[in-house]
Structures are given as structure tokens and as C-alpha cells.
Image 1 (cartoon, rainbow, N blue to C red):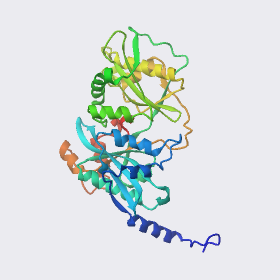
Image 2 (image 1 turned 90 degrees about the horizontal axis):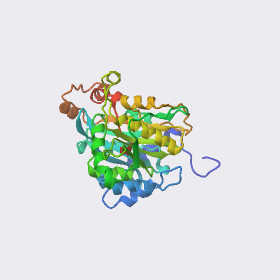
Image 3 (image 1 turned 180 degrees about the vertical axis):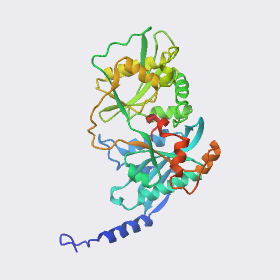
Image 4 (image 1 turned 60 degrees about the horizontal axis):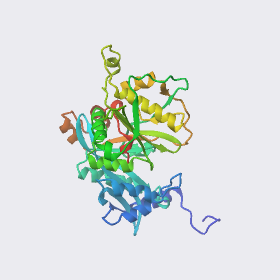
Length: 382
């Protein structure tokens, strides 16, 4: 007995046994239609630094995601209380030029009073089985707890970021024609932006295919909670050359998606005298520099650019990487990928698959979707 309490104390072994027992007393199931208020009550316990309501934040995906179904939530229930949950976000990822059914994982949360009992692990195990039953061949999530998710089968596949800033002594970039920058307006710009984004993203493996409904949902969900969405074109032209999306995450402005209508050369092709990069990358570079100036920030955060034409234009106008300490006190989140159906993927792409090898799955994923070229827009995050 603890002298400070009349409650018996458990030794470490007994505590582990009690936690395991509690986890297996829980009922793991999918959410039923009409139970959304119950899972939102659980998610309302999610701590937001700015004091926002967790229920209001997570309600957005329920209301706006066109692929939402109650069964996308896997929950743990003890008695009549939901104590842990995870949400499946069905998506189609571009892989080797083909759309692959993928289950995104998000909204992973356990009530503080029920943590360290293995509940979240059981919820995610059931979510994996649910995704397999639905024919998902890959699973993707965004996480900073990489070791824990790694133990459950996901591998770090992308992420990290660069901070880009305009040098104080950077000269004004010469232009053959002035540009016009304006805020995105869905009624006037959506069709052109959809076409531009599809062209640009189709060359970037790992991006999400979006139809019109997905785009409308993205406009509601990409901000945190508000989004900056700018388009640029040559003055007097009706054709949009580029766009840039971003949102404030804490005190950092983070780019969530961009596109331009220029070519997509390698560095070697870019240096060839006969290469004509077009105006899209140049206009996007100016849009980035203008956005930074307008926001009055020392730098903007971007996912890895992987766009030599854009990088060359940024360097030309004096925008480069900024070494700035990250004092948020937590590790940066990264994308993690998991292969759910290697046999199906091997058959789809006519690739070799060696079952039984401990490293075979990760090696197969690297062959299928190399880390060095993986590109997932934060605007599609879940």
C-alpha cells in the first residue's frame, strides 16, 4: 500500500498486465452512421495551442470530404464510451503514371485517461485490415512519432522542409512583361487551376488525383483554418501561368501546393543553351518572393521543391535557403508509407515480389515509388 493513499499500488508487471487487460476489454469496431457526435466528443480533447475546439476542427473533414463515411472511423469502445479512434481517408495516389487506391490515416487520438494501454495500436491494426478489405493497396500518414508508427509497419517516405527567403540585397527581377497577382476565386479560376494542377502534379509521383468534388473539399480543408491562395498571369492575359497555396502553421507560413505551366527539365536540360523554360516557373518564383514581402516574414516554409526550373528562377531573383532555428520544441512531421497489398501492386506494375524477406516490402516500395521522387501536397493532408 502507498502510505499517501488508500489505493493499492501496482508493480510494473502488474501495471502492464492491467493495461493489456484493459486494451482487450475494449471493443474495436467501425463507427456507425449517426455516431459522429460521439467521436467528435472524443476528438474535442485534442489540444490545440491556439485554444481551438478539436471537435470543430475534425468536423470539417466529416462535412466536406466527399469520400467520408461513418465506417472510415475505427474506434475503441469501453462500456458505452469511445476512448480511441483513427480515421481512414480514401485517396488515389499517382504511382508510375497510374492511380493506386490508398488509405490515408489521420485523426489518431486516445483519451488521456486510457493511454499506454495498447488501444491505439489495436485501432490501427483494425484500420489496416479495413483498408485491405476495401482494396487499398497503400497506406499513408503524416506523423512526428515515427518510431511508434514504424513499429506498426509504416516507413518514413518523405517530408522535411526548406525555408526560402529573399536576400535583402536581391535585385528586382527583370521581366519582359509585367505580371498580375490576384487571390483565387473559385467561380473564375477553378477550372483553369484544376487543369494546371493536374498537368503539374501528373509528373510528380505520390500526388493525389482530384476530381472537382475533391478540389472543392480541398478548398475547405487545406487551411489551418485559413488559406492563402494566389494566382499569377502575364498582364492582360487570361491564362493563369502559376498558383501558390499556403497557410500559417503557428508562426510559420507553409506552402501547401503550387504549380506552373512551364516545362519540367532536369538540371542538365536546364543548362542547355537551346532550352526554353517558358514563363511559368519565372512567374511562380516572383509570386513566392512577392508573397514573402507582403507577409513580412524572413522566410517561407516549403516541402522539397524537386523542380529545377523553379529553383533556378528563385536563385536568379535572389531567393535562397534560409538557416533559421526551429524553436517549436517538437520534431517535424514526415510522411510515412506502408504497403498493404504487395501482390496486387506487383501484378499491377509487373514488378518482382519476394514474400517472406524481412526487408522485401520496403525494398519493393522503393522500387515502386522511390523516396527521392515522392511528392505529396500538404494541401491533401489528413
